[in-house]
Image 1 (cartoon, rainbow, N blue to C red):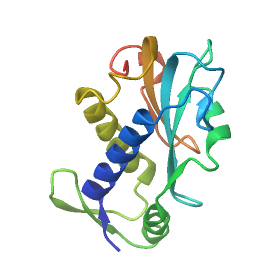
Image 2 (image 1 turned 45 degrees about the vertical axis):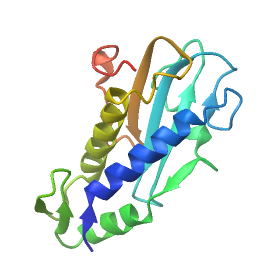
Image 3 (image 1 turned 135 degrees about the vertical axis):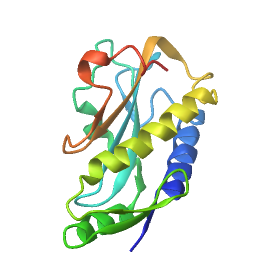
Length: 167
């Protein structure tokens, strides 16, 4: 098995852009009542199934509180190769193609949540730089948030919110 992070980046970026373009304030991937988006939360998991989900939080008190997990079913982008990679890494090193195209070997036991979280973050920041969120009905200070389902990765650090992560 070899993990191509460039492919993951492209597919995550495309999925995120599709979700933003198709935003429906009463959709199944929205937390809260119809209104401006206070946070765009991306959650992901690789240890039990392998998926990524984009959730729009319109709650007045939107926060990285894990409530996005209630909106997984039916909204996930399947990533079964992440599950395979996680299982393979339990016993042996994992070859990867990094975002810059170089090849590397992740030692057995490497925290894959960090590796995948950084790919998600890169796609999210590129989407922001490309104006993907420009047409979204955002509340002032709308945040971009990333969280691994089991807490293995989170961005930004809680105390750093409102700086680098504003949409």
